[in-house]
Figure 1 (tube, rainbow, N blue to C red):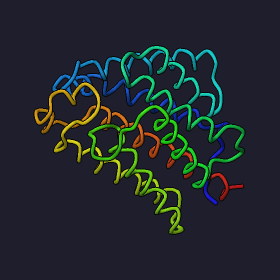
Figure 2 (figure 1 turned 180 degrees about the vertical axis):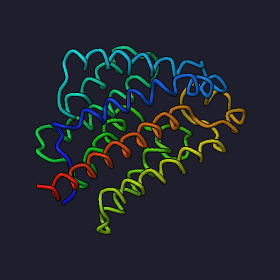
Figure 3 (figure 1 turned 30 degrees about the vertical axis):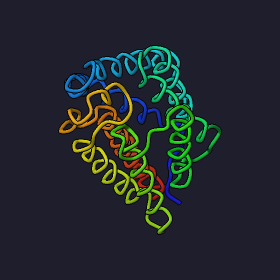
Length: 222
C-alpha cells in the first residue's frame, strides 16, 4: 500500500507554515470584511512561532503537528487558536508511533482532527465556518479510499471537495462566531476559516503527493 515514513515527513509541517505565512494578508483581508481582520495575522503568528520551535527541536510528523497544536493554542486569540490547536492535536495523536502513513492512517488523522474540533465546537456544514471545508473534504477522501482508489487520487478528491466547500461559504449566512452578528450582511464573502483550512489541506495534499512519489521512485531503484 502506498505511504510514507512519518520520520521523513517534516516537509508537511514546513509547507503548512509557509502556506500560512504566504497568505497572511489575504486571510486578514477576507476576515476584515466580516470580522476583526486579524485571522491572517494570528495564523501567521502561530505558524512563525512554531517554525522557530521546530528549527531548534525538529521531529517526526506527530511531533511537528503537536508543536503546531501547542503554538496555535498558546499564541492565537479568539476561537481559531483552540480550533486549529485541537485539529492538529487530533491529527498528531492519530499518527503517533506509526511506522508508515498510508491512506488508511491519513484517513484516521483527518477524522481524529475533525473529532477534536467537534469536542469544542458545534459548527456544522452550512454554518459558514471551517467545517464547510473540512467535512466535505473528509467525506470525499474516505469515499475514494473506500472505493479502492490510490493515495494520490484520494488526496485529489479531498482537495476538490475542500475547494468546493470553501467556495460554498460565499453564499452562506454566518450562524456561529462574531460574523454571525451581521446576519444577511455576512453573505457574499468567503469565510476566512474555511479558506485557511482549505489552504492547509491543499498544502498537505501536495506534500504527501511528493512524499509518496519519492517513495515509489526509491522503491523502483533499490
